[in-house]
Amino acid sequence: MEAKAAILHYCKYQERCHSEVRNKLYELGFTTPEVEQQLSGLIETGVLNEERFARAFARGRFRMKQWGREKIKQQLKLRKISDYCIKKALTEIDGDDYHSTLNKIAYKKWAEVKKDRSLQSRKSKLYRYLVQKGYERDMVMDVINECINII
Figure 1 (tube, rainbow, N blue to C red):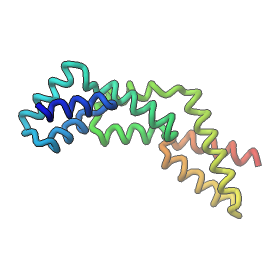
Figure 2 (spheres, one colour; figure 1 turned 90 degrees about the vertical axis):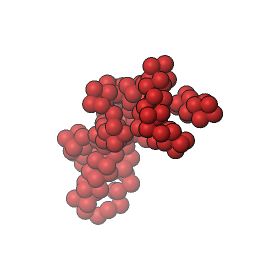
Figure 3 (cartoon, helix red, strand yellow; figure 1 turned 180 degrees about the vertical axis):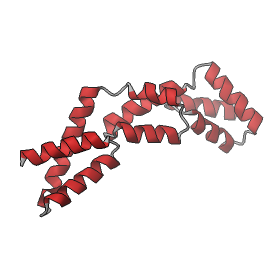
Figure 4 (cartoon, one colour; figure 1 turned 45 degrees about the vertical axis):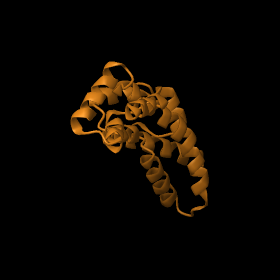
């Protein structure tokens, strides 16, 4: 009974995906049938909701870590979230906020790499940085061209 209370607290503390809860149940010593039973119980009571998790994950990673849609999508797939929930999660990111955040971090990084001598070096550093943050390649190229025009 103690383990059931622990898993309930674990789920209520913050949004969790099914795979995180499944791993935690195994850590607590549950067997496979018990894990499946606990998971279905948590889903039925509404404590565990994958779509709600995906939406919260996307909002949080975008606002706090300024990740792009591609990185958020990749991380949700690593957590075995369904394509449907991933699509729903990405609707949480406002298009205008997305563009302004991309521009803000691009200009900030451009200022940091300005000390490099060659324009090509600055462009490649900015490109790699923004793609690593998860922004779409075509948007990254557009913002790099804007940065170059500001010089």
